[in-house]
Length: 436
Ligand SMILES: Cc1cc2nc3c(=O)[nH]c(=O)nc-3n(C[C@H](O)[C@H](O)[C@H](O)COP(=O)(O)OP(=O)(O)OC[C@H]3O[C@@H](n4cnc5c(N)ncnc54)[C@H](O)[C@@H]3O)c2cc1C
Figure (tube, helix red, strand yellow):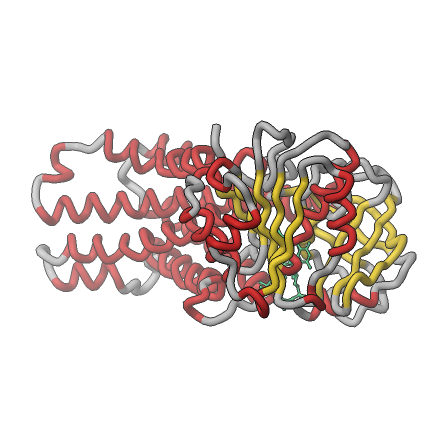
């Protein structure tokens, strides 16, 4: 099953309660425009709450669970879209019910929208909606460049929002028979609780593996490559996967005890883990000075960027931009350690020579890995990556699966160039270094 199909199935499953309501529609539900609006109002409420709970269930971050869905970044995009759809449906829900009540009287319509007195059913519904606005808002670029830590703190409001939305439903729901209403919401809420407990209790207690920073290499000015030795059970992973790293060096200026996602640049067969980090913000800048010998916790592995095997029969094109080179570095090291022939063309896009990190190592890997061709692309000399560069440096582009990892603009350009070169969309795989 393709990752896109697997992710579509999540939507179908999340929309099943709403589908059941449509299937069980009664004659009276569409008897008049007002009844139809009322039905739609209840339907949007049920669909919205089910999508909200499905979104909560997807936040569990169980290593391996994300792989069939194309990796954690893709799964979390689905989580984000489910929450957005839930919010829009839940916003439409009271408006539709108010419009449905309008033909009876304006007072009835207003009473549907504006809670008064001890009308806990309405108060809880509005409180849930307001909390949703607060915790979802900072995640949209529409409101400016998101601040990850602020977004993370505000995201904690998701739990009270879900509880209030459930309370609202228990107090007011009357679309399905009471018993089924209970089974549905208690079942989905229980799954959400298990999922969130896994994430915040189980994985923090048992899921993080202890490591020690063994060595710090400085391949460029603002980049370090950390080597970590297991202080207990070692992590098992595939090349190009990523982990959440929590450094515990007490002298770190920023980001101590804070988890951040980083790709493993080591090959799975190596005794230690390697993680290359570019200074992009407070925590990644501070970790450039992490002390050798200090402790760190590693959680994962996550991601499903690459297929599990590689062969000349399945030719690949790798397009890396900046620090987005790390999954390719890990995979090239791994394939070189296996020594089997491959058919891979790599294009490493950077601004200028100063940012061409690991250039010598890539050239050395290309010299001993049969079928691995390495090319550099310098923006300041050659301009944006284009079809001419691609056709000159990569034979039979259209027959390859294209893997792209890098900053947003490169991702967009590289996808366009690959599509224009005849690569079908289904054979373009991207990895984003941004979870928002
Ligand atoms: C799947 C994945 C793999 C990555 N692999 C690497 C890698 O191999 N090497 C590397 O140098 N960087 C990698 N990154 C990026 C790295 O996680 C961020 O640069 C780092 O978290 C920035 O934190 P900061 O506090 O220094 O910067 P900030 O100024 O806080 O943020 C800079 C950017 O990083 C994002 N970010 C910040 N904190 C987090 C977080 N905890 N989780 C997700 N995103 C965050 C922000 O949204 C912002 O876009 C990867 C990111 C992802 C999602």
